[in-house]
Length: 174
Image 1 (cartoon, rainbow, N blue to C red):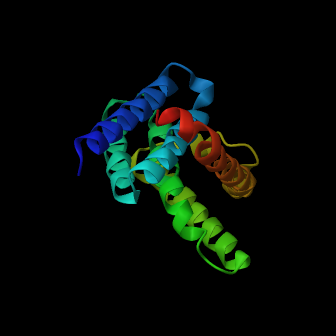
Image 2 (cartoon, rainbow, N blue to C red; image 1 turned 90 degrees about the vertical axis):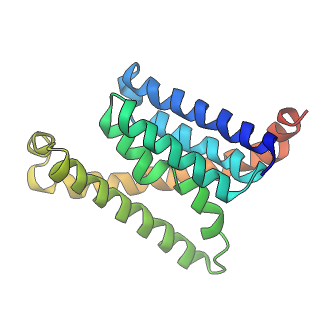
């Protein structure tokens, strides 16, 4: 691996950690900042490759788990926003669009349920479940709304990747 690749991976790791750190400063951006940090990994995939992007994901996840004040934001990055932009390009190679969308939704739903279970069972966030609107149907309603937001996020990542490839990359690589 070239030193320039290592430096670029380190710079993107630092940028992602700063974005994750800001979740403690800007609480209403609890999901937006991890999503933005994950989107930064698209540039790493394009410029260096998926293996380096996975290393950036791993380092940011590890640091987020230990130093980020907002545990739910760290969980969101670790369980979905961090690796999904890396996996997205692989999923989009599926020839039949229906299977591609089904695979993306399956990954999102498995990630959301796993993060929810860890938040409730391991991290002891049971009171969040009890305070949820719509009673016992609250988690299902939130998951359904999450699927809608995920579809919008996936579209936004596609647009961002296009803008990066056709406009930002030229400026970035000067």
